[in-house]
Length: 236
Image: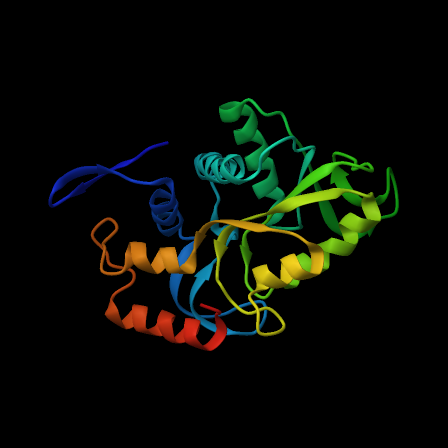
């Protein structure tokens, strides 16, 4: 998956984090402007994994997630859990990449937003969790931690599982409900460690005045807006 980039000093090999940031921009997933997050915060940048729409993108996305999994999670994984809705394709893509590129055959499951009252019923789809299973949550981003708080009761109701952690595309480094980051709160409340592929700081450092396909996405003005947002909502 290594990519080489032409620079004024020649060709260099990109790290997978830089490659992932460029991949998000080219896929229209990482965008810059004026947005409102799920938590109601006004933000100059937005990560929308719902904009992935091709098989090629899904395959590459799964590879990035799988690489993050392999770097941070050691030992057996019984299942990947993808919270509805955006976590569903992410968990499937990651499971495929783990099988195809790392020789790890891992189950996956996800929840429904609405309880099914016919057929097998319930809220869970895919692998049926059982007591003692080691489960890894696959999500898109962590902002205030709201999505994690929503899915924890679902997992606890399914079985007495062991949570190995949470893998996300981007850590926005923002406060949760208090003075700590959402990641710190997740660990304090649930004992869950979060492993981002990249952080917003890495996004800024990688893209500031650095063009992608001839376009600069984070110029000095956008960097100033992002830094102001970090000052207001983030824990450095």
